[in-house]
Picture (cartoon, one colour):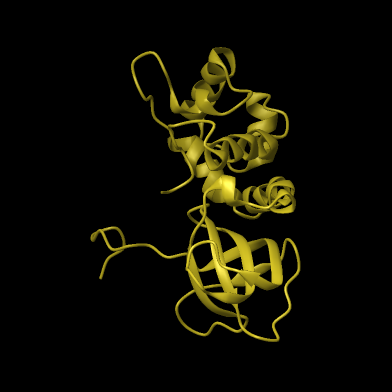
Amino acid sequence: MERGTTQSRKYEEYAYVLDFSSRGRSKTVRGREGIIVTALGEERLTLLEILGLDESEFEIGEKIYIGKEGRTKVQSVLGKLDFEQLSDSAQTELNNVVSTIVTNNESRFVNYINNAQPLTPRKHSLELIPGIGKTYLKVIIDEINKKKFDDYKDLESRAGIKDPVNHLSKRIIEEISGETQFRLFVKK
């Protein structure tokens, strides 16, 4: 089966721990108790509630495997969470985890920038990223037309965008927290 040919539901393979409670109560599944982990999926950037296996230990910021086969610490993915359901500590940790994901998936995000399209004749999708206005947009597009960006360093040096990880992370946080209706990165 070729990738992208069917509209099958995509599941996260990995998630990053934002918070956990060794004796917690599920917010998504009534009556479910145990090791309740709040995490952010790496691929779709969705907030998830996970039931850990008894005796499992978790660390804040840890990358855990939540795919279908061969889980070692996770009993089940209970459901999706809204930003408002996050504990204060999970909200605080979100910035670090998003930065980690944006840093560790550099080619994915650079690829996004290289292939980003206008949303309307007057608004380009890149302008939705904090720090990129009309001026930077023009420079980025001119540079892409010469040669696509290789990595963040290339983006910084050729387009003058300082700390692209920070700008992309800010946008993702805006999408997760519901500050913006339009989503570039976070999947429903």
